[in-house]
Amino acid sequence: MSRTYNIAVLPGDGTGPEVVAEGIKVLQTAADTAGFKIKLTTFDFGGERYLKTGETLPDGAADELKKFDAIFLGAIGHPDVKPGILEKEILLALRFELDQYINFRPVKLYPGIECPIKDKGPGDIDFLVIRENTEGVYAGSGGFLKKGTPDEIAVQDSINTRKGVERCIRFAFDACTKRNSKAPWKGLTDDEKAAGKIGKLTLCGKTNVLTFAFDLWERAFREVATEYPNIVADYAHVDAITMWFVKNPEWFDVIVTDNMFGDIITDLGAMIQGGMGIAAGGNLNPEGVSMFEPIGGSAPKYKGLNKINPLAAICAAGIMLEYLGEEESGKKIESAVMKVTADHLKSLAAGRMGMTTTEVGDLVAKYVKES
Image (cartoon, rainbow, N blue to C red; front, side):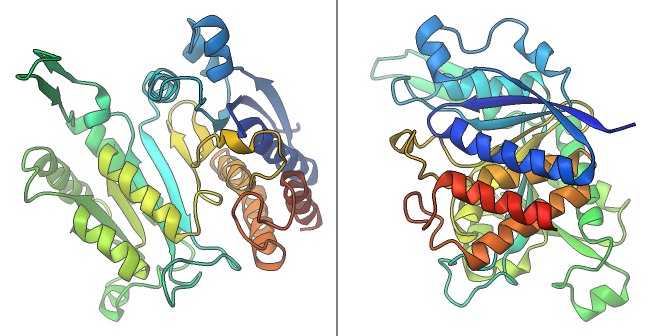
């Protein structure tokens, strides 16, 4: 029986529908080539709906989305909607209601893409960031006292539960094991290889200042590490990691961290891999429905111009297929993207690619079909 995947599509705002269209084009080509099927259902959640109806997510939206195998998101953000409304009431709401407790962010420099770091190439930047996605300061705990007065107080609490921290850390150890199962990570020392290590997981924190939250994180990390004797369990302060991302990105294999630090370091990761035009990832619920997206925003000034770079959305589609179990097809999409970046694109920037949005999608689809 043919495999069929039911995908919810949230094209979103601005150039979101344009990049999603190219992602779907490549998805369909991969499905036709490999012999599985995708069934798409589109939802209009975003700025235009909000401006017309005053509604961000209708009642029951999360329950409806739980019925799908995955969610493919374009971008949320509209110039006529106050910042924070759509992001909080759609993106964050879905992450929390669907319990997408893992943010999965590969950081990989592809051939042909100019790296802003001197003397660093594709062999130097290839790591994975696992970010806790439903706790920390983004949990929404806190409030104001005497708001609008000279004595105003604002409190934003960081919520870290043993359950939430441990399940994120355990996912990261599993991801590190899977990532290096076929060949040990090249950054291991000779002694580590001799000891049977295959990869390295780095906890990114701030144990010297955030002595409550990251005491919990570090204790859980060290305890779970005993179950993975083939993984080097490492630790680094977040400020050190931001420096080393720039100076020595080749030091990293897999990184696990909390919600806020993960939000920050993955944007730095996007820059060293070439920019938002190539960065993609997923918001994962390993026991439920997960959502895959390009990392960049809706770029409304390029809407309808056929100039926006669709590669991040196409990469997100590839990550989605791998996560659904179609690993070979996901890898084919990545390989096709790498061929396009190496041989065809002049730049990742909108309007400077040397090709239109649809031409880039057509070319990736062509290489997927030929692979």
